Amino acid sequence: MYIEQLYTNCLAEAAYYIESEGEAIIVDPIRETAPYLEMAAARGAKIKYIFETHFHADFVSGHIDLAALTGATIVYGPGANPLYDAHIAHDGERFQVGKLSLEVLHTPGHTLESSCFLLKDQDGQNHALFSGDTLFVGAVGRPDLAVKGAHPVTPAELGSLMYDSLRNKIMPLADSVLVYPAHGPGSSCGKGIGKETWSTIGVQKATNYALQPMSREEFVAQVTDNLPPPPAYFFEDARINQSGYDNIDEVMSRNAIAITTDAAAKAIAEGALVLDTRTADQFEQGFIPGAINIGLNGGFAVWVGTLLHIDRPLLVVAEDGREAESILRLARVGFENVIGYLQGGFAAWEAADLPCDRVHSIAAEELNSAVAAASASIIDVRKPSEFAAGHVLGARLIELDTLVQNLPLLDPKASYIVHCQGGYRSMIAISFMQAYGFKHVTNVLGGFAAISKTDIPVAVEESVHA
Image 1: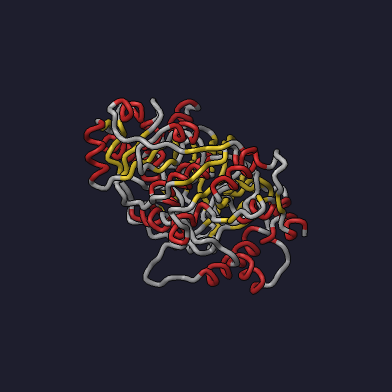
Image 2: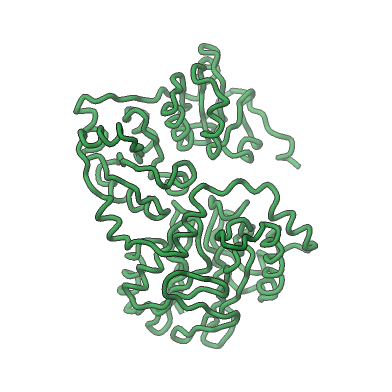
């Protein structure tokens, strides 16, 4: 038996490679197929099945391309209705791979077709549960992401189904059974996901809030309470995963095209959005006016999907050598309307003597004097939990997720000082503010992490200590 978790930090997503006797199964692959093909080839194995726990909303799966390349069978649980060839398993159906078997456990709740896959060893003993978005470490899947069909299901109805799925299918498993979820911390597919990317049934029964004794009504209330709006691209990605998509090689061949500065300037004038994927430090020193900075060195794909419209034409400005990576990572979340990348990057734009902009930044120690000098307001773009754990006195919380919707409430002529925890999110926020016409915006280098090391007064919400 061989099991490997292939974790993609950018998506907070875990795919799995399972192998026995030269046969392999892939669970929930991301869009590019190379990692799985290379692993199977290196180990002398043939991929027999591709298991999908549900129609993923946060990324485009690689199951269709991988099946075409390997001849493997795509397997979904009951209730799935993909518009391409796949085996729709019945609850309790088992699939053999070498000396191992996987049993399908239909666990509706996150979505109607959500299923977990229970791996049994060569002696038929339960070994591991590939729990998809049904059970995470410390959390469960949010019940509001079902593919919208002719008969929509409400979050409360899905929450009630999840109550039964957890208690009837998952909690009866032995404490020693390993839990391998599809996501880790940072994913928007659940709230409060723990920092670990795997666990055991016993640990989860002891520590996961959703597995504690409670009534159905209490459970539904907890899993549906305070759910943030899902990122804008989620339902489109779920639709793509259900209906199918273009081959990733074809997408790359038409999107990873070098664009000259003249062609880029023309495209921008015609409405293309410049997506600058360089680091915040590089972007700060100079960028194309109106560009949005979402760096590859952070939660790139998720922030792209959350903040940008999936149909907007994009022109990529990337660090030298990372152009194709930028475009591939866009395709992971279904962003394929890419006209190309700027040949020579920002340096070429600058050398052509075309208009440039930059970001004004200050050190954390300068915050108070900068506020006083410009009568500036402080904007904190972190999450409410981060804000509650400690924030600058007088700072205004505007989560990055909601910044664009809140910009009409701000005065574009006023002065603002923006920070997050370390600088990645604040540079995204500032790029949006400057693109929307805000002229007096300042970034705090190092964010709140740097501020907290100064003598600047910090407030902590009482609820944090409760």
